[in-house]
Image (cartoon, rainbow, N blue to C red):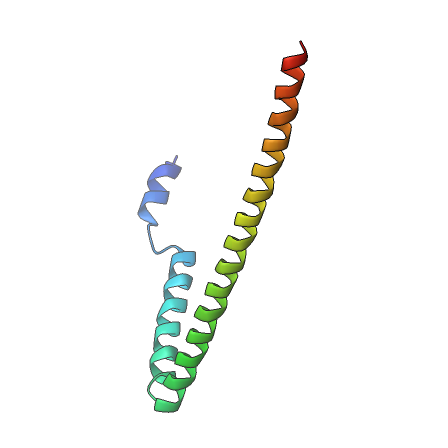
Amino acid sequence: MVNKKTQNKEKVGVNPIVAGVTGAVIGAVAGAAVVLNDEKNREKVKDVLMNVKDQALSYIEDIQKQVQSRQSEAEEELAVEAGKVKKRSTFC
């Protein structure tokens, strides 16, 4: 009888998923090197990246404004409710 654990240890190789991911990364790097070899393409990539950066910063600013607005609203609501509680406690 053959031990299956021993057989599995003998068949050690490269995981197909790891090999696929490695191939994709190598392909992407090679493709980027070819594309970025041309000055016009480098400028296009630079413009796109700057546009993405500007959009991301704008999005972050909008989120910060929304958070600040909601915080102010919550503080106002808390102050109103605290006033109601204070009035109730003085009646008791």
